[in-house]
Amino acid sequence: MKRIILLATLIFSACQGKTFISQSQTAELATSTQSQTAALQTVAPEMLISTRGIGKAKLGMTLKSLKQVSSGDTDFELMPSFLEGVDAIAVSQKGLIQYYILYDIEDNSESDSMAAIEDRTITALMTSNDNYQTEHGVKVGTPIKEAEDIYGNAVLAYNTEGASREYITFGNKNPDNIKFIASYFKLISDGLGFSGIYPEYPGVSYVTDKYHDDAAIAVIEVACNSDDCIN
Image 1 (tube, rainbow, N blue to C red):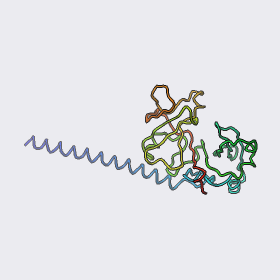
Image 2: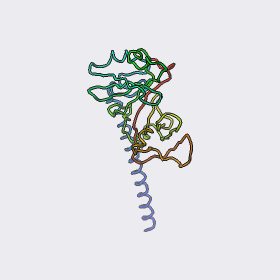
Image 3: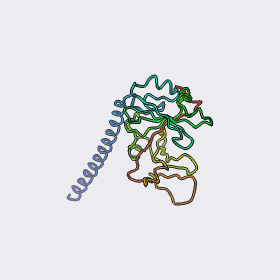
Image 4: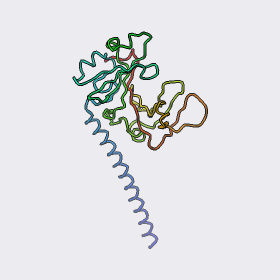
């Protein structure tokens, strides 16, 4: 009789354990869903990073068009050779850079003037301003681990012969046109290092799904092919 009672107690305890785990998992899922829903409801259009652009700057529009829809306190500063092979225009408000418009450097001196590029189509934008975020609340400073919960498993990569950026791609949910960057090569000399943990071998392309515990998104780009950029 005692054995029967003991067996029944163990079965009851195991069921309770399974119920507790199930409730815990359900609670975590609900919290995650609520957080994402809240982000979807609270991101103002002028602060949104989407597949179409950053804030009021949309892929496919021109600089002239952006100036027309921007507030009066918005400043536009040309920054030649901002990156290798890339000029930029810093868009600022009250002295704080909101984002950059990126242009490929053209082989003529006129491209160094603001007037010469006002009618060029915007095909690439970049921000390191954490006031801007995606519809799910992902922004500069978001830990890669948290972004994985939304977009899927992260893979980090860089190429020593390519652009000076360490990119992050996420599972099968990586948003179209949006690129997440973990670090820039130019930061390495400052001792900041890579976010990813890469194998030690001489090569050109490096890829890893391992990263440091404190790794976070450093920059977000939104870009499209010129033929596909339709505002």
